[in-house]
Length: 205
Image 1 (tube, rainbow, N blue to C red):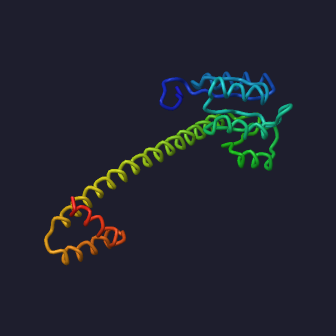
Image 2 (image 1 turned 120 degrees about the vertical axis):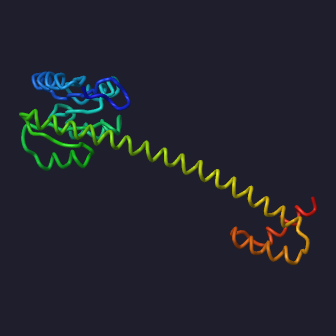
Image 3 (image 1 turned 90 degrees about the vertical axis):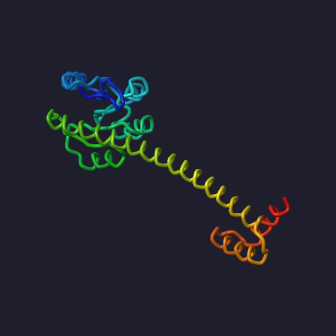
């Protein structure tokens, strides 16, 4: 049974088509494949279903009244950027299909839909969706790790600098110490006079 990411719940597919017969046929096929199915007869109902049913995938007719499938694609992705969209069209319209793909749809199929082709396309679309989600999660994790490691490194560097400055402040022979401070300033990338003042402050404690 296809399942939604990080959940035992079945994957939900939204079928958007103004023809009830097509919706019911796709509903039967998808249900047999183990999907949960939500249906919408038009774009407005589809947007409402995206908000309420939270589908992972959407099969969408291109030619619909009021708002076409082409117009629906960006609105659907605005509601859920991860939604895997496959367009359905009764006639082969390469320009329209390409426009849908540019807007973010994964694929388009010609009606009457070949069910084997639909199964493959839907599986691939959902897989790509999950890979994109995983990629973002990995990027967020890496960003957090880099932030933590950077903070730890800065803290260790600060501690090492403090120890070095205390050692220099306690050292005898100011001339030699001054040269060491200037070398340390060069290594740390800070002005030597600032480091000299800091060491002098520590010497006075």
